Image (cartoon, rainbow, N blue to C red; front, side, top):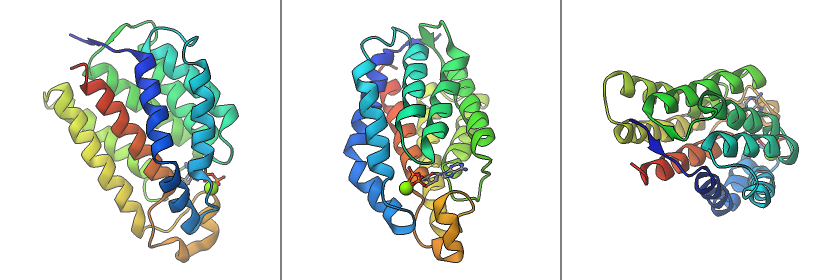
Length: 210
Ligand code: ADP
Ligand code: MG
């Protein structure tokens, strides 16, 4: 049985989480990038705040609207990538008022596939894929093993954190910081960090309804 999720509340929680972590995300990006990731993300997510009342009732409609706004309003590399992320997340639950763990598994898998196709990044390239791919796999495996929705979400968040931390020792292969070569080692990736924040916030807002 699925749970009814208020899509508007989910998107508002994401917007708050990005705003709360804006300075941190820009600071991380400053170490090996140009220091604008938090600012870019906050700008895009705050645009979505203005549309949240008109975006629709279902989680799918809300995520799709967020994705469409992000594509055109996040500057830098991440607009098309996070736009794809949320639009692809919305797809498997179109028209649904309730979602269960199998729906969320499909949402994560759809987002991962879209992001990898869009950015051509693989695990090990020091991008958000280092957070998203292991987190998606951990969630899917937990569901397949018969764990509850909550247990699977907790596993996802735990694994996302490890994925984010794993980027510290990696050399960037994509985006601006790849120009630094070996000097990109020693600090975590900004996109991997924002992806962790997003997955953690999604988990928290779903867990509230479980
Ligand atoms: P910019 O690099 O244009 O300043 P941001 O600072 O907003 O953009 O985002 C940087 C993040 O974008 C990186 O930390 C990395 O995670 C992500 N990124 C860059 N290129 C790619 C790509 N091809 N695929 C996936 N993620 C990418
Ligand atoms: Mg940047």
